[in-house]
Image (cartoon, rainbow, N blue to C red; front, side, top):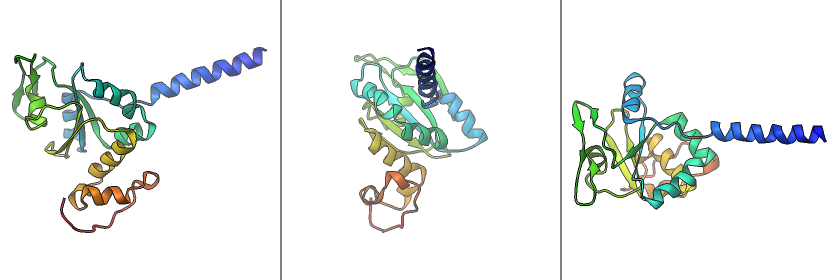
Length: 185
């Protein structure tokens, strides 16, 4: 009986250690900018608000997926940005603040990143020079999100239209080199 209990305890402890180790290493905006200054890489910004049901669903499903977690942590500086935060953010010589409105208000940084189109959740991809590549609005399931992060990180967006890319994307071989097939976006 003691041996069975020890094995059971081992699996419980091992499982809890594994689940703690498997999460996206979210950074603040300032931390991501500082790291990017030292070692440039693309930045993934997840813009959300607390009352957003689809944002919470993405947290529960997409951001706990092991393939998403490992790829995002290895290739991006991930930032979780509350579009209603009240803290002042200084970035690139600019100061971004919370702006009150009749609906509560939004942070200027969120407005800037989302090109004035507030929709939640929205995942914004920035290049290594912190320029917005593209915001992707709405909930994304783990499979689709995995395609999206590969598409932007591996610069496929520069040469392959999204529809064509998704036809050739293989989650088991996501790093395969796609041949540019021409065409528009």
